[in-house]
Amino acid sequence: MPWYWLLLIFSLFITFLIMVTNTKAEIYFQRHGEDNDYLLITITILYFIKLKKEIAVIDLNKKGNDLGIQLKDQQSSPLGSDLINIKFESIRRVLEKINQIVKRLHHVIQSMRKILRGFKVTTFHWTTHVGINDAAVLGPVVGGIWAIKGTIMQYFFFFFPLKEKPKVHVNPDYYQYLFKMQFHCIFQFKVGYAIYAGIKLFYLYWKGVRHV
Image (cartoon, rainbow, N blue to C red):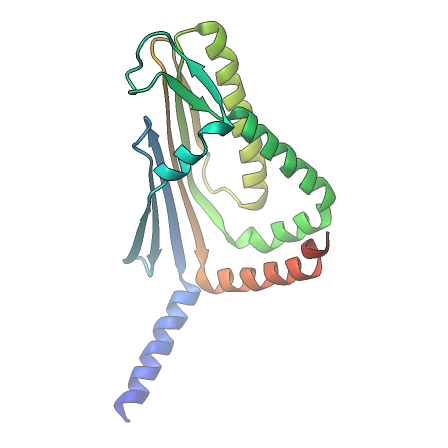
C-alpha cells in the first residue's frame, strides 16, 4: 500500500478519535488589583494534547473605567489608587437587557438549551473578594455582588448541565479597599458534537433570532 494511503488512513483515524472522545475546555480568570488581570484558556484534546492561550485583558478594564461606580477614600489605597471601580450599574443594565431578550425569544431559548445539552460543566469556582472600610457601604455592595452572581448562574446553568456542585463565594474585607476575583470553569464536550451544535445554532439564528 502506498505511503500516502497509510497517511490518509492514519489522519482519518486521528480525526475520528478527536471527534468522538471528550475534549476539555478550561477557562481561568483572575483579577488582582489594577494591573494584574489574567485570563488563560486551555483546550485538552485526546487527554494529552494541550493548547493554551493567554489573553491580555488589562486594556479592556482600563477602557471601561467610566462605566462603574467609583468608591473613593481620603487616605491612600494599597492598590496604588484611591478608587475601586465596581461596575454594578453597567452590569445591571446588561442583565435587564438579557431578561428582555429571554422573554422575547422564549421558544428560541428552549431550542438553544436542547442544542447545548452536550456541553457539560465539570468545574465551576467563582470567588470574589471585596473590601471597603465602611460597613454601611460594604453590606449593600456584597448583597449586590451575590444578586449579580445568582442571576448570571441562573442563565448559565439553564443552558449547560452541571456535573458537580458549584463553589461560589463573596468574601468581604472591612479593613481595606480591594476588589479581587478568581473564576475557574471547565467544560467537557465532544468536538463532533460541538460542530453539530454550531451548525444548529447558526440555522436557529438564520431562521429565528436574526429576524427578531
